[in-house]
Length: 121
Image 1 (cartoon, rainbow, N blue to C red):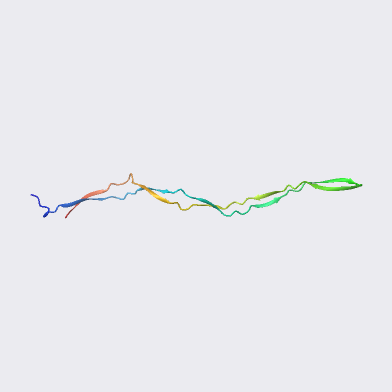
Image 2 (tube, rainbow, N blue to C red):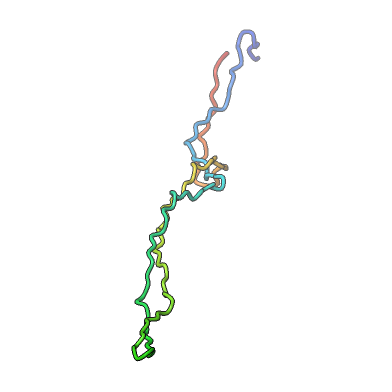
């Protein structure tokens, strides 16, 4: 003969599990960097004019028993020599926006340890 539930309450049981923590497999997903090159104001180049010595010749002609001499020079062959200034530039990148992309771990996760726990009501 069994005991009626009003006199003998039935135990209530449930599974209790304890598992070791297991790290997720996560990797960062970042937006493409939006970098810029910023340069300081460029100073003017350092220039100076160079002219080689002129090529001149003396031409003389006899006029009324006297020598009449004149010097004639070719056009000057000057040129400008410049030393370019090196620009001062730097790359700036704002902090990228990133988020973690995680998936369930596929290995190295120990199974949980479970047991059945029962209590009388």
